[in-house]
Amino acid sequence: MENKKWAPSKEENLGVITSVYEFIKDELSELQKTTGCPDSFIYDFIGKIQNEWHPKSCQSIVRNKKRKN
Image (cartoon, rainbow, N blue to C red; front, side, top):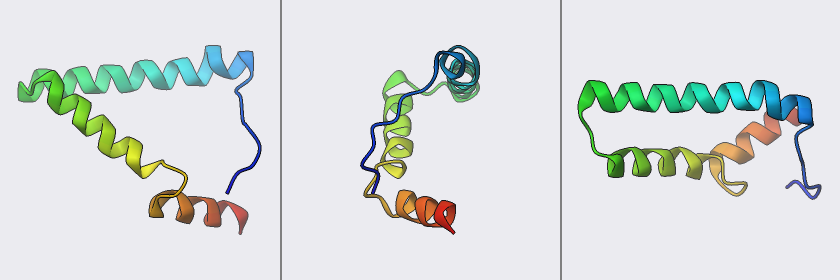
């Protein structure tokens, strides 16, 4: 478990974080355009991905153990 609160630097925020944010939005727009799915599907889809990154999820625990080794 992570005890420290992490915050991105200004450079990270303006660089890679903004870039990834825009990339994800573009990909979701493309998914919606290709499939014709409603916003509610995109919302639920993002929620499933979000759950995989919850600190207590199995996926998160495995990722953190791999980083430590």
